[in-house]
Image (tube, rainbow, N blue to C red):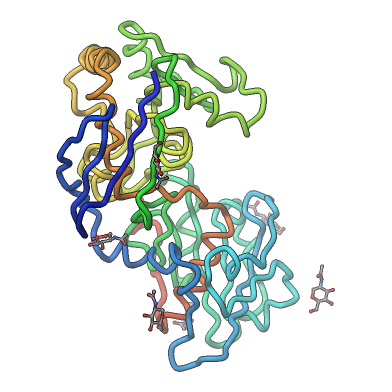
Length: 357
Ligand SMILES: *[C@@H]1O[C@H](CO)[C@@H](O)[C@H](O)[C@H]1NC(C)=O
Ligand SMILES: *[C@@H]1O[C@H](CO)[C@@H](O)[C@H](O)[C@H]1NC(C)=O
Ligand SMILES: *[C@@H]1O[C@H](CO)[C@@H](O)[C@H](O)[C@H]1NC(C)=O
Ligand SMILES: *[C@@H]1O[C@H](CO)[C@@H](O)[C@H](O)[C@H]1NC(C)=O
Ligand SMILES: *[C@@H]1O[C@H](CO)[C@@H](O)[C@H](O)[C@H]1NC(C)=O
Ligand SMILES: *[C@@H]1O[C@H](CO)[C@@H](O)[C@H](O)[C@H]1NC(C)=O
């Protein structure tokens, strides 16, 4: 099965698309994404016009110190300008720059075991400490040790001082033909941390009684090379984007890279549907909560499997939007730098724990 869409602009703002050579009127896709979220990402989306002049402080290059390499993972630090068009950032992981750093970004998991892992030298005046975390609350410990130390938060929570999600949508600039890859299989799932009591595992155990689910990852079918992940998933119509725990705004690369990046329709388990709809078009995903039981979900997936046109409707948002998948560690540090250029911050977070948990 190969479905090709050809999008033809007729007049500004009005689109038609050819579906199996049939002209079909397309309703505008309603995306409930809050405007400020879109705006926040625009300058990232358009590198050619996104260079930022620091407000009232035009020539300043900010020194941003990575207190640790996150999870000891290393990457080039000079990518903010070429990759995101964000200028005025000097990122460094060299602690001897501490005294001169405008901000120190501290990745929680790397310091949470012992408060002595935090900077011990006196803090230079005006230096900001930024609490950085992409993990859900259940994977964090010792948050109370961070009381009254940090000035800003950098995380996937929308109400962070600096919001940095795992992915986002941007408008397509040019109408593009896209092809739904040939789908020879039905449902796939990649899971590395199998805990039988996790909601996602419990749900899967029920779902698999009613529909074939191919499971990859540790203890299951191997993925020979992580580069092949999207190739493998793209053969499937549906991908179980099941989060390891359910928390506000905790919507991860399982949806962005694994599902959208593979052109598979995500079946999500995480926060409630309304939370997903802040970030994703309503008709881009299937939520387990849409069905009273896993059996009902299985029946629905089988129905879609038998109806190419309805299945394809889960892709129609791609006429107007494209998922941004290029998010990597450096993205988050560049966003921190951009935020500091855009705004003068003066605050202390009394309790990260009270806010985040
Ligand atoms: C780029 O930025 C300049 C200066 O801020 C502005 O005048 C111009 O309209 C922008 N161009 C686009 C394409 O947004
Ligand atoms: C760190 O910075 C110091 C002083 O700026 C410099 O002497 C040293 O070579 C740097 N270390 C590394 C690993 O770049
Ligand atoms: C934290 O680290 C310090 C210094 O390395 C050590 O003396 C102390 O015992 C550690 N505390 C804990 C709770 O591990
Ligand atoms: C996408 O385009 C629409 C109208 O064409 C506009 O209202 C919206 O703000 C744009 N969104 C982004 C992310 O640029
Ligand atoms: C889309 O595909 C059609 C036919 O396959 C082709 O004629 C057209 O030029 C393509 N349009 C774009 C924007 O690539
Ligand atoms: C940052 O937080 C520290 C620790 O509470 C505080 O002493 C300092 O004044 C804060 N800095 C700014 C610029 O708000």
